[in-house]
Image (cartoon, rainbow, N blue to C red):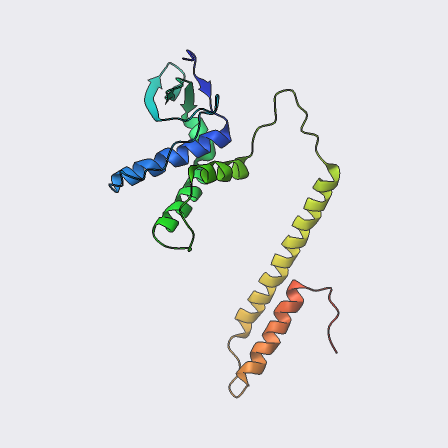
Length: 198
């Protein structure tokens, strides 16, 4: 058993938060047979059969201790840690509950998929001592794409404002031709550099 608790990396914390809250929700809904299994222990990778949770109120630290069974690894989770992943956890739980309620047409998430989603949202930390090595070209390309997307959104927003001001089509105007003109305007706002057909 590890005597001193260690912190959970954010991706693991997110996966554990989602799984623990989802299991609690399943138990509140009286689903006791097919509970979502726990993720593996972040330290040793061993299958976790149960988790013991206790609050630790120390002088300057209000934390929760998670003890993985049977491997006995201990993790400390502070309220600040939970705050960092709370938004992602809420989004993931909402998606899982939507599937449970039959919305979205997807199948239920497995524990492995929860862990994959957590890694995709937060990412794994770089190994200690490694330099992340920022790819300058990727940064330039991404910033250009961001500027392009912002200008697309601003053009479409301006078009929307113009349409709201213009109101409905005048009486006696062919509705299909009115819509065709609107669709051409929208197309031109989204793709302003394309050559217009003659």
